[in-house]
Length: 69
Image (cartoon, rainbow, N blue to C red; front, side, top):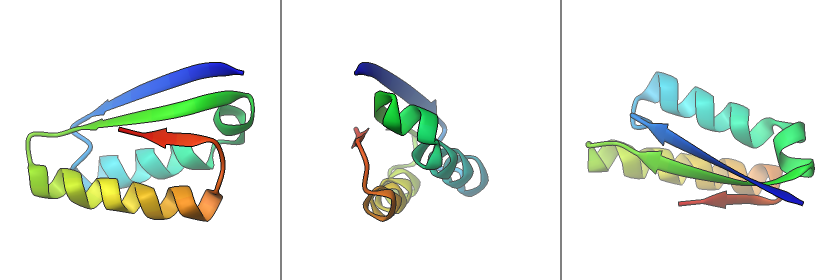
């Protein structure tokens, strides 16, 4: 299985962060053919933590081979 690492800069943004994280975690191609790791980056620690927790909820919902940093 190949490894895919996606770095999202500015992911604390509700529109960009939430939509991008959801799209990546919902992607069957990225999550069945590859081991996906998503790295979240933002200067706003509160917003970053909010998106991290959101991603954790989605990760549990989709329940596949998804990593998070």
